[in-house]
Length: 244
Image (cartoon, rainbow, N blue to C red; front, side):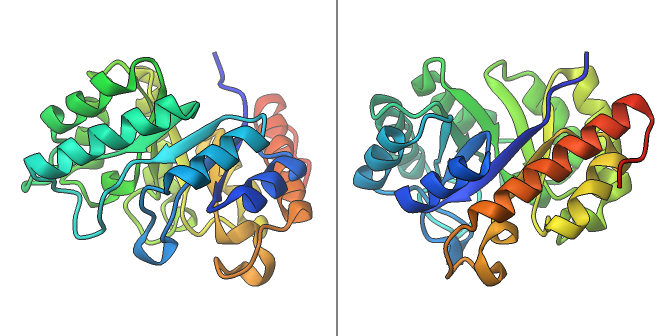
């Protein structure tokens, strides 16, 4: 069964989240410190966002940007962050952990997932620096609560990794793990990305912001256009038509 198209948009505060929802985004990834690749936001921001939008809010769980290899102390912090997100009403979390060898750190993930207690779970772009994209996907499929992975197919941007993303999408379908494409997705590249890979969940950040910059707010009309492109590509992929 084909999954429905989902547009996820990165928000750093309540104004972002409201603008994303206004434009038709289906889900928020809530982060702080985008200059460091995204860290866990503070309590007040999570509270504001969850209370001001009706679409699902997934909170980034990442205590620092030094690496995706975490100490026992880091993991204790992460489990506390998961508990905080859950108690504040988030719909899900975005988390990832790797061993020094680049494999999924199953023990660290198990600790976070145990605290999630039913929240949705996305494994973030730690996947793109893992030892093996397909091996990581196989490992994550053994962790029941992990719904999806966010990946650029191991390349700098998702549109550069069409063949890799297509392969991952097909493997994800077999393993029942959704593959969501993100990084460098812009309005002019979104439709071809979806049509060429079959992927139906798209993650956007600077691509729906004024001047294409995280220093600028989300542009609701750009979100609306992105959603329109996604739906159009999804429809053409399903019925074999070309709606460009």
